[in-house]
Length: 324
Ligand SMILES: Cc1ncc(COP(=O)(O)O)c(C=O)c1O
Image 1: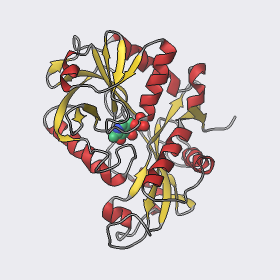
Image 2: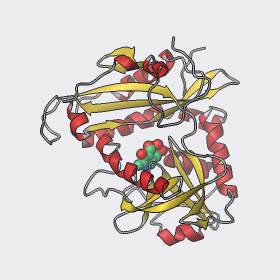
Image 3: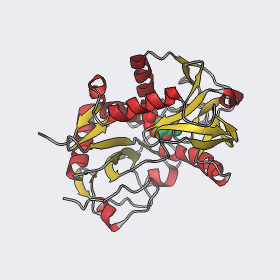
Image 4: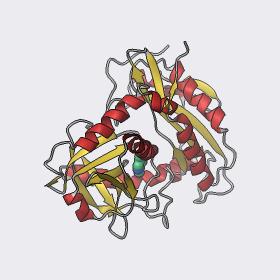
């Protein structure tokens, strides 16, 4: 049994003694997070050759149940990332999902949480390559509240960095080393006074946020960059498309120009961390009248109800962690 946090810390908080006593899966066993340590010669530490997923779990206080969101989809994407990175032998979707469920259960969370499964090149050696290396995996979980504002709309700005293109770094997989690119974007945006970055592709089209996919609304239609625009193929993005179908809202996947953001009726970001985050402004131009628009509000409400297991139509998204 692990100590409860009264309130979940925001993303980016440093490890606390409490956090170190959480349970994780590491080198084939369930151990204290504080005891899961890797040698500094580990290839993934030297070169960023790991892949990971972020899975949220939502506490439903009425049902006293923790619901993990879309475990299977995350594990399928994790395994795809492994394939891209030449990591052939990884646990099956079922086995990996069971470990994720166990880690969440063993931590006995009574609040929203975040689970991170990761597969990494574990060989201890100098040498930049992907082949001929061993790999291992871990699964950790920590409490997590809201990552960015989900209510009133955030100020955003385009940044000078470009989203890594698929010809340089596979953007559809979550490779640990590739997260330096979003880190540059996020920090540039924040140091410029915005809450979040809007990142463009090499040819200047809108790709996504630093770690979120992006939707705009024009004339009642939801528009989002297609999966060949160097975006991460987001699981929340797929969920929003499913919600739109359920609500009878048309979705188009196509290129979006930067100036379209300035005249869009609504803009929102979405992702595991960000959930659904309406955008109040882009590059100092108010989105619509600067307030959260009706489609963003409706999609967001449906999303937040779905993830806590409150909507029968979306029950297939969630896995109850506690039995009975
Ligand atoms: C670069 C990037 N884009 C988009 C997303 C949103 O993806 P998902 O909804 O699967 O979390 C994330 C977060 O995981 C991300 O890191």
